[in-house]
Image 1 (tube, one colour):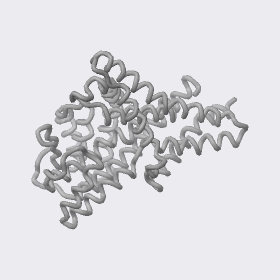
Image 2 (cartoon, helix red, strand yellow; image 1 turned 60 degrees about the vertical axis):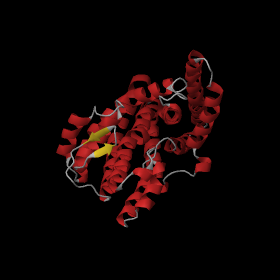
Image 3 (cartoon, one colour; image 1 turned 90 degrees about the vertical axis):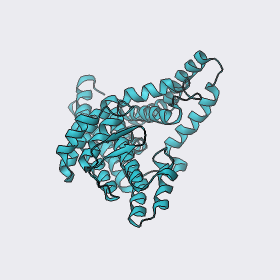
Image 4 (tube, helix red, strand yellow; image 1 turned 30 degrees about the vertical axis):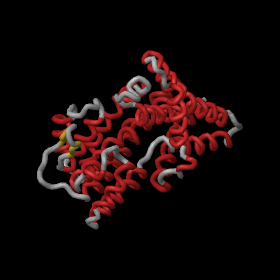
Amino acid sequence: MFSFYISLFIDPILIFILAFLIDLVLGEYPDRIHPTIGIGKLITYLKAKAKNKNPRIEKTNGVLMALAAILAFALPVFVLLYLLRGLPHPIGEILYIIVGAILFKATFAISGMGQYTKPIALALKKRDIDGARKWLPYIVRRDPTSLNERQIISAAVESIAESTTDGITAPFFFYALLGVPGAFAYRVINTLDSMVGYKNAEYKNIGWFSAKLDTLTNYIPARITAYLMVVAAFFSGANWRESWRILQRDKHKTSSPNAGYTISAMAGALGIQLEKTDHYKLGDDKGHISYEDIGKALRIMVITSALFGIVVVLPIIALRIYVIGI
C-alpha cells in the first residue's frame, strides 16, 4: 500500500518534469499535430453554430459552446490516461507517464515564446524595424505598421510577461490540481477567450461566458506568478526591489484584472515603462528601453516558471494525493 501511494506521488512529478524537459529541448509541437490547433478548429465550428439573433439564446449557446469544447478535449484525455494506468505494471505506469508528459506539454509553451520574440530582438539589433514588425502578429493583436521601435519592444515584453501566466503557470496550476485533463481544460478556456472573448457586437453574447471563465481561472495563477516574478528578478540579476515596487503601484492599471500583475512586475524588474497606447502605462519611463530587454524578459519568464513548479505545483500535488488519494 505504501508503494502505491509513493507511485501516486512520483508519477505526476515525473510527468511534470518530463513535459518541462520536452518543452525546453524540443520546443513546440508542429501545427499539424498540435492539440491547440484542433481546439481552435472546434471552437470555429461551434461558434458558427452558436450564433443567434436572440441575445438570450446566443448567451446560452455561448455557455454550451464553452462547456462542449472543454469536455471534448479534457474528457478523452482523462479516459486515455485512466485506461493506461489500468494496464499491467510496469508497462501501464511507464506508458501513463510518457503519454501524460507528451499530452501535458501541449498545454504550455516556454520555448515557444522565445521562438516568436527572439527574432524580434534580432531584427531590432540589425536595425530592421520592418523585420521586427513582421513577427509581432504572432504574439499581439496590435497593428504593427503603426508601432515604432520602442513600442515594438514594449509589446514583445508585455506579451512575454502576460504569457508567463496564461501560457505556462496557469496550465501548471490546473495540472497540479486536476492532472493533465485539468491542464487541457484550462488550455481550452484560454483559447476560447482568445477567439471569442471580446466585447464587440459579434462576440459580446457568444463569448461572455468564455471571457468570465478565463478571468476566473487566471485569477490565482496571475497573482502567484507576479510575486514569483519578483523572486525570479533577484535570481536573474534584475532589479527585484523595483519589480516589487512597481507591482504594488501599477498592478491595477490594466482593464484586465489579471494582466497588470505580471506586466507591472516585469516592467519594474527591467527598469522600463511598458505601454499600450491609449490603454495603460506600467513602470517608470527612465528613457531607456532596448531589444536586449526581450532576452532579459525571457530569462525571467523561464526562472519564474521553474519557481512556480517548485513552490506551487509540487506542494499541491503532494497535498492533493494526501487529502484525496488521486
